[in-house]
Image (cartoon, rainbow over all chains, first blue to last red; front, side, top):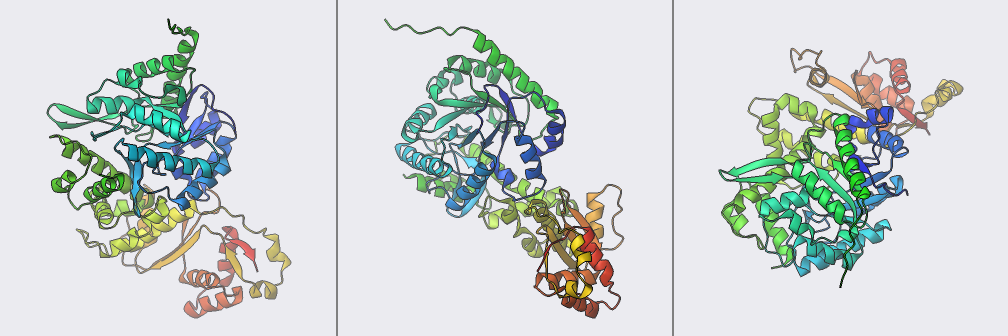
Length: 287
Length: 255
């Protein structure tokens, strides 16, 4: 199991399989959603096996429903565990969200209130996944479209979750930015509350705008376009605050463009990583 | 208010037939603001669109036959009637073809459930476990009598169907820009769906081959399967049927 390099990687999408094999673009690693590989055979596994022999791989799950009030579905977790065993990704992550209730699976991630009860339940679910997969997982902050009555801020909730479960953090900079703007908060200030020492991977993506009324636009995380300037700025700020740079994903799920567009965005992220690494960190002196 | 209560109320509001402000108001932990209903609606729309997209990937020809708008409407009705119970698109999509048998389309489309069944077969073939066909030497090494007495294990990515409608022509007209729409859908056709390597293929075949595949699937010997086919179709060509199975890598073992 290779470690992810401290470089930018890109989402692996089926329309790019052949081109990636042929041209082997200069990106540090690739990320997949394991749900796209639940079928046992066929072209998707054919290509993934070949590509995984060339690039380090990360898995970003969307279906374990870590935020579910019920425990993780053991049959589905076994299916995911089989994929992890087959491809041995360098990192495995899922979201601080829920996507199932009782027997229903919704294929969409919903928010949960950040309460003590939620913390206990998510922590239990994360430990279940970690025990089954035999590895530490990363938990990703979601984009919130509406406000809930929380007992903790998201950053504090994640800090407590890291402490209680031993998981790492996948910091989705775009999600942080969207949540803050949707809920009227300052993303640069909120960033300070996240457990930055536990960040092992960063996600960057584009988003879309959904006007709700004349003076309010909802920012939606559909990973459908290039990354906007404020998200790049927040990314640079986050990198300067991390103890060391981490692997960064250019995530793209909808309206997937030509491979060169993803590679170009990855180059930009690599450039920022290099610039931040060159800049000497100012050590805080406590008097 | 517990997390379970929150998720139960959220789900109820999510899958109500229409967006219901009263149900959204019942969700605990939701901060009450004039925009809350619209923000919740964004989650609801996204969930239904995501589920619909899964069905669109499983049923591309059906989308073509129904048109985008009507397909999306049917998919929403399908999910609002019963929530999906699995993560795997194969299992999510499975009940949709039977659902279409009772779905009242605007235009009369009696062939729609069969087109959907063909789509579903293609999707299953696409994702089925890989298997290697038997070396063709085995067929020359066995005497005709020995071969006739054997049973066949078919490739797991092989499905077949008969329809009273021109499902092959319909499928072809929607999968290739060079193929014209069938003049009439009221013409029985049989198809075999295979994925010997990476690509799914749909072949139009005679009814005799369908009988052979049915019999093989039921565990009959090759001889018995060929006899079944001859009884159904007096013009059945046994040699061509066996050649079809071998040429398309459909035989993975003899026993």
